[in-house]
Each structure stands twice: as structure tokens, then as C-alpha cells.
Image: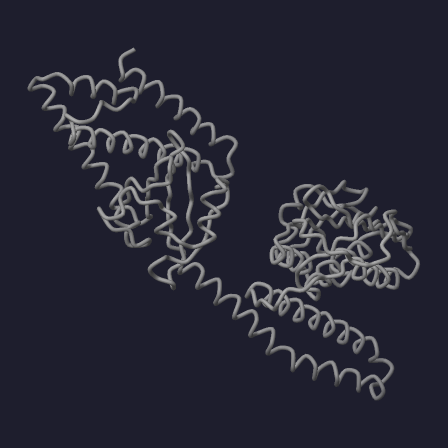
Length: 437
């Protein structure tokens, strides 16, 4: 089959795949843009191979390829003036491709199957400190020495971009996307996200500072409201109660904002072994007190594993999950708390027979101030920050939150952690589950 026909069929197939994204993708033109970028860099890759072959024509065999590039190789092998013209056209094509990628603000790096540098554009050289021709064929991990990059590159799971500081400018934050292509080769695209991170830090600082400044006036207001209880006329008692409720709600909001700000700013105290069994027993007793006998609350402990981390943060996260179950489960309902090991994962399940959550709300539950049912959250005194705090605590402990729900029947919130080296929680732990409630 002529190369141009093969190339046309390939292009039409990829175009059809890209256009299908208009129907199923939440970002309709993203699949088409990604496919177009991959086509561009596939051709650029072939052009680079052709250039290397043409510049060392006598010492290397012709590269193996397909499509129109194979036709060009065959034509270039003919010792005629026509083949010479094709060589010039091919060189011009390569130069245009190189100029187009050099004009991109994103850094582009091509790495061979052994992890060695093959080519990069001007932006990548500036962002990563790459020098031409000194760094050609050097291992990429020798030039980007950050341990997190070495682990990320070796793992081969590139679904999530990696953020790290530039090797040559510590105030430059880079987001790296890696796409495998060809014969286990990799395309690295680097974005400078320094400004975005700076704005994010400014937002965090603002929230933290404002929340801190509100603590003192709120404390004063609450103090005066308590004093007024004894001197205010009885007919104004309802207004005073409402003011106290709103002041208390504002105080809870400020405390949650401060807690979230501390988590986001990533202040790290030394990690300690956290006795999860004792922690859950204490929180369960608190939940039973909050329930006041209206719910059947059970705690099942199927493992004596502890966690390495920050006890006050884990207490906050577990309390949020368990107390939420109490608040959103009608009287007479059941709440089952279970701590167990599942393979290499430690899990805390908080399962209730409450009102449940509609499916379209589930992806957004951990957003700050997001409420699946705003009216009910107001009645239960929620600030809208509880699950956001849970999410950040779990991230700090290399964990994640899973949520399943059957609307009208109940929900299950699962905190997942990587199982650490075994740390026994208590000497008298029994293999059978312990029940409380």
C-alpha cells in the first residue's frame, strides 16, 4: 500500500477517535487536541530519526518506519537528483517542526526507552537547565535529581501530573505530564505553574489570617452574650438565643477554617504511632453521647494495626466521619464503625442507615462549603468544611476517601491508608471483633 494511503487511513482513524470525544468527554476538544499533539510529535520523532540517518548516511542502516516516512526513505536511497531534492524537503520539514515546537511556552522533552534524553525544545532547556549537546543521551534522572521525580518516572503511572521545583530555580514550580509513545519512549511536557501556586498560597494565607483575626472579636461577642443572659428582659430571650446560636456557628466555621488552613499549609510535626483502637473507642463513646440513645452505634475492630501520623489530625477526621453519620441518620437508625485490614490497605468504614446522598453529589462532597442538602446542613449545624478537612488529613497520611451511597437507604464513608509496618495497638487485643454500643 502506498505510504500516503496508509498515512491517510491512520489520520482518519485518529481523527474519528478524537471527534468521538465531542460526545463523551466533559472537555469536548481535549481528546482532539491531545491526539493532534501526539500526531505532531510522532512525525517530529520520525523527522529526528531521519535527520540522524541522513547526517551519517554511510555508517547507519536506514531506520524502520511506516507510512509516508518509509516512502521518503526509499526515495532517498535512489542516487538521483530527485532524491537529493527530497532530502532538502525533508530537512526543511524537520526545521519547520523544530521551529514550531521551539516556539511553545511549554517545555517539551523526548526520552528514549532507556530513559536517555533525545531532544528538547528551548523552553525545556530554560526550565530544566538542559544543555545542548552536552546532555544528549544522558539519563533524565541524572539531570532531574528530585527523589519524587525518580520514583514517579520509574513507577510508570503517569495518570496524575507531578509537581516539583525546577532543578535550576527553586522559586519556579513545574507541572510535569509524561506520555508514553512509540517503543516505550516518553514525551515529557513541562508547564510553569509558579504563578498559580503563588496565587493559591496567597488565598491560603488570606483565609488563615482572616480566620485568626476573627477569633478574638468572636470570643468577646460570645462572652457578652453569656453575660446578657442574666440581665436581658425575658421577652428578648429568643433574640438572645438566636444571636448565641449564630455566634457559635461562626465560631465553629472559624475553627474549621483555621484547621483547614493549617492542613493546606502543610506544617509537619514529628510523626508518632497513633493507637487507632483507643482513638476509635473514645470517638465512639462521644458519638453515643451525641446520639443520646437514638441510634444503634456499633464499633468493630478486626485488626490491631496502628498508624504512623498525627493523632490530633486523625482524631479530627474520624470524628467528622462518625459524628456526621449520627447527624444525618434519623432516630432509630444504625451506625456501624469498622477498622480492618484489606490486603495492603487499612480501612475505616463508617456505614449508616441514614438519608443517603444522590449520586450526582458524590464527586463534590469534599469541596469546601459544598452541601448535598443545604437546608439539612443548616439544621445540623454543619459548616460545609468537615469533609474537606477529612480529605486533607487523609492526603497528609497518604490515604484517600471512598464514598458509596444508596439514596434513601444510607451511606458508607471509607478512609483508606497504606498498611504500615505492623504496630500493635494494644497488648490485649483479641482476634475476634469487639462490639460497642
